[in-house]
Length: 89
Length: 258
Image (cartoon, rainbow over all chains, first blue to last red; front, side, top):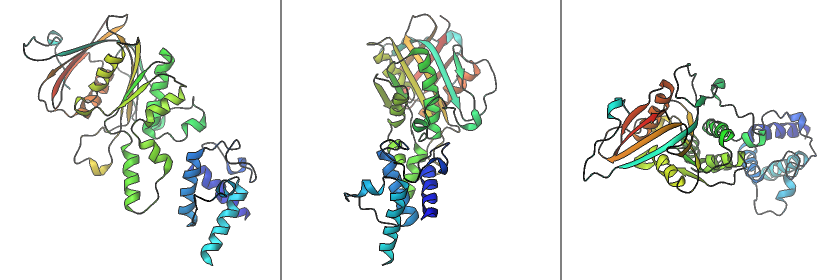
């Protein structure tokens, strides 16, 4: 899971073009939106596209839990793993 | 666009031909282009921003505001910001024939290949996106227009500026272009460089250099994009007058000392 968290930090930096931000600057349990990194709704959509492309996962945009999945690196990593497990069942 | 001699700057009177004349005072201009600009006898009252390794410097914006800017949007944001430092918050007109062509062609290619569309790239392809970003960068509360120019090419911005100046004292005009994607180049004239040019215009007759334009109907040969590219060249070479033949009109202009 730690490797996946590191990978997600780099994915966020690359995808959202966060110049000057290093993976170590992003705490795994810090909020990604609403403060924290200061990401906005376009970033959330952009990140969703990048996650689908990299991990071939399904993201249900109608899910009431979506905001919780994208709350932090830690919750996002948990979401990616759960979706990958679903697709391998 | 070609040089015209000083003596023929005024269009001949020709009854039956509708002529439009526009006069502005040029208060400031600013240019960035994606190639080194050798020092020369530029037009007075303006500046060429540093090449900066091919990426216009926008370090004066917070990172979260500049991170999504394309090379073209960086160029526009840089010249508009520098001009606004001279004039404060004023209405603005932005003109580009093809805008973010590199982005939207990339999106079309991705869609053809069954890939998802990048939401931020998509939102930045909208023709008024760059003007909107510039407005945000400068915390502007003034109106802005975003034009593609149509058959009047870059001169459409002067027409709009003339109209805006009937109601206000200053207007910022920004022209910008970049090379079209390869797939289009066999069909359309295209700029070889990425550039953005801004001007602060006030009503004619004020203190400063006088930019005079005249339009008359006519058939010509030049492509609308060629005229914008030639304007940049004219500024950098310090030439003070030119004529541009467009599809349905002939535009003649000059820059005179006050």
